[in-house]
Length: 306
Image (cartoon, rainbow, N blue to C red; front, side):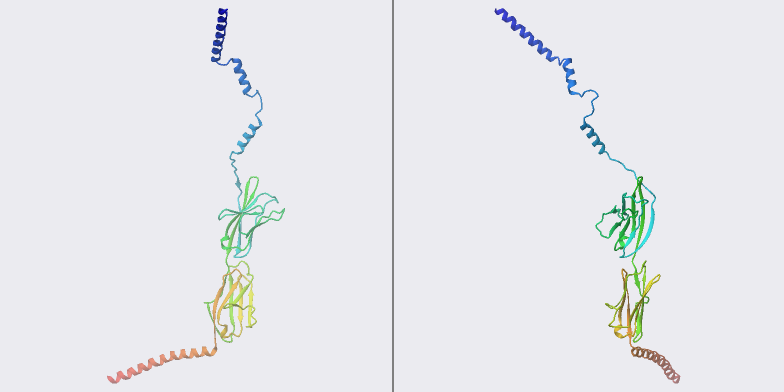
């Protein structure tokens, strides 16, 4: 009985030893095949949707190089007067709503794009009637710093079409011919002329000032006439009749957006002028009489001495 139990224990021990040895040799081919099948996708299966999205996202992140060609630019030359408004023209071939931008070449600042303005200055705006081919850049209260080149860029299918506008800004100035001093006799007429130079258009107004008082419409003084003459150079002519000593002083010609000019007028009474001239002549004549007399006296002294 005991020997039978011993045999049973020996058989169980042999079975355990053989199982341990089998586990150390590695998995069976059947178990290996089953693991690969469960972990890999079935043959000819589609890529999961999330994989396609990730690929597309990566493609969108790739940098895109856009090569644009700028067509040969046309050029328009404009001259604007200081302080006025100027309109820079730009016209497209078709009434299209494609992107049209105005760029200031001096600093490559984009002033407008479409109908939007990209500058803090309220002096710039684009005029584009709906459905038209016109994209006009308007600049108000023109300054000397506004001079330079402006570029109108029109986006096309092949690149950009460019139109250049070269803007010149001139500062008109007033000129009163003469040496800055004008002498007038009392009772005569003060006549002054003011010429406006470097002005592409006539100024809105031309005022004359006596010292600090404007006299164009001086009813208190009376006898004041101002006449403006158009021409290559705008001229303003001032006439003050019946000049009096109190009319002496500084006379200034001031026009809109123009550098002013001044002249000083002296009004002298007739008797004072007459009194000055004889004294001057008398002094000159006395010199002519005195010198010959001295010569005669010297001769009279020298000859007897011999």
